[in-house]
Image (cartoon, rainbow, N blue to C red; front, side, top):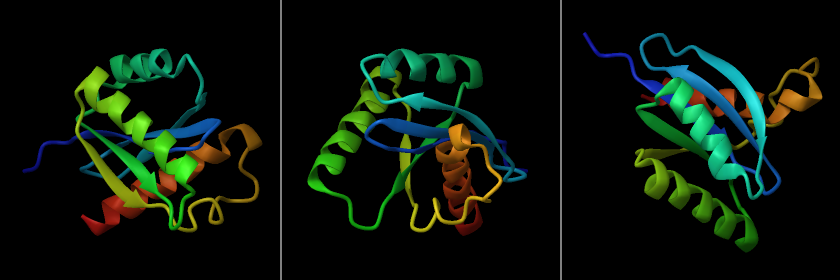
Amino acid sequence: MNKAQVVICFDYGTSKIGVCVGETVTGSANLLDVIDNDRFLADSLKIIFLEWRPDLCIVGEPESPSEDFKKGKKSFVNLIKTEFNLPIEYADETLSSQTVPKETSKHLLDSYSAKIIFEGWFNKK
């Protein structure tokens, strides 16, 4: 029997980052609060990682990101790797924002996108 892993999935954005926590036995995922991509980002991540103790992080990969976006996402990934020593996998995020249900609260849209990214990653495993 496989051990359940806790996975934190991110929908990276230059100003906001959607977050969800999932687990690998059932594939269930729960939305967490969207975090600001600002000077307090490391503190926000520390709070999430201390509470959930993830085994893995997943970061969404957009289809054709701008150079500025790529640079910012690379810094984000490096922060997770160096400060928190967590493994990272990437998952396709194509159409994740477009498949968010219309009734989703505006402040949770990015986290719902993270959940869709997690579900896509899980279903390909």
